[in-house]
Length: 462
Ligand SMILES: Nc1ncnc2c1ncn2[C@@H]1O[C@H](COP(=O)(O)OP(=O)(O)OP(=O)(O)O)[C@@H](O)[C@H]1O
Ligand SMILES: [Mg+2]
Image 1: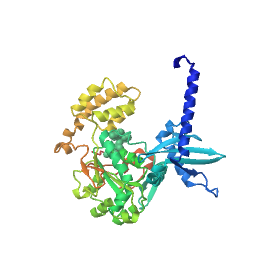
Image 2 (image 1 turned 90 degrees about the vertical axis):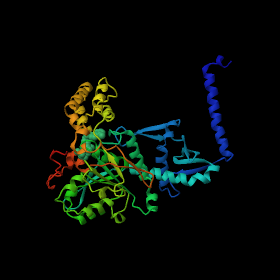
Image 3 (image 1 turned 90 degrees about the horizontal axis):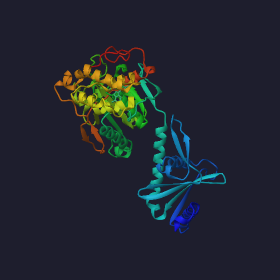
Image 4 (image 1 turned 120 degrees about the horizontal axis):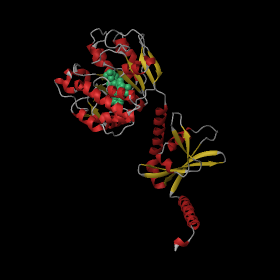
């Protein structure tokens, strides 16, 4: 009976079986079921083999790394970041187009080499696309690592930049999770669509309109998008642009892989003192000059309402995706309570749900402020939210807001199919001014035109 043997005998037997299995897999290699490819660290002239670095980055990004027998853990460059790296002489498995391959981190005589093991029958089918895939993952990784900048246009028609480190991420924005996921996959599919756009003879750009009441997260969302894409942000202050040709020049000076943001487009359009022509703004929105200034652009426009905007300005093709940012409902409130107070559930939630269902509402910014001030006591924070909803929330109810009284509140997203198979959502945005508000250092004292673009004033925005 097996159970009569001491435990160490069992351990020994299991160990032997494991060694035998490992040897057996090598026997498989000898019978040439597999082919091995080496990627040495240096070429024959002892120069760096750049492919080695790419493979190293690729391997260390594999989720399967966590399953290898030994994996090194290092701290990364970002705070709290942990980086995994394959230990010498360890193997990690990967699958590609249905084929299973493995990589071994071979160390011998101070020479480091990655060895790719691939079934001979799969080699012809997957080797080239697999290596191409490794290149792409590496490029994407490098792109994500790169520091992004925030550019602002000055009165002299030139861009000035500062490092961009806005704290918002798509995860921290309280919004319908289905909508958030669809926007995410829209952005992801945009990133992968270079060939597609070019085959159609279209500029590789995508434009978004984010609209909704003040303090609903439009500007934060722009920051989160830029972070998600790892694109630079160009915050266009139209009130600082003297004429149409200046606007064209500004666009020409932008680099690719960038988010170009125009905040409060509705206010700008309503501003009769502007020196820009309507067609100048439309051309800018279309990125008409993109043929000269490259592509990989995301354009974002923000507005509080699109009610008074000429429909030509927002027509499909000019603005691909409209996203509405509503005031808080109970679901958004719960997301905020979780992120601001660390509260997932609370005995006051049923009461809050009832109040939200009665139509009372506040903006996420207002609720966030209350939570921040009372963060040491979640119960006090929730009671304060209840009071604020009872006092102010009723007047914020969409039915009581004059501008909305004539029509129903917009649906969160109106989907429209597009040629790339991505989704088009109909709604609006705000951006530049928010960045300035959020970053004191971005405040440019001065010379904005009079009217609603004054960044330092806390003027009524509704
Ligand atoms: N949906 C949200 N989820 C999480 N936080 C939010 C949300 N909406 C607003 N906030 C918080 O409120 C503050 C203001 O938000 P933001 O500036 O993005 O609003 P906005 O829609 O751009 O407002 P405005 O129309 O006045 O420009 C930010 O600090 C942000 O963190
Ligand atoms: Mg804003």
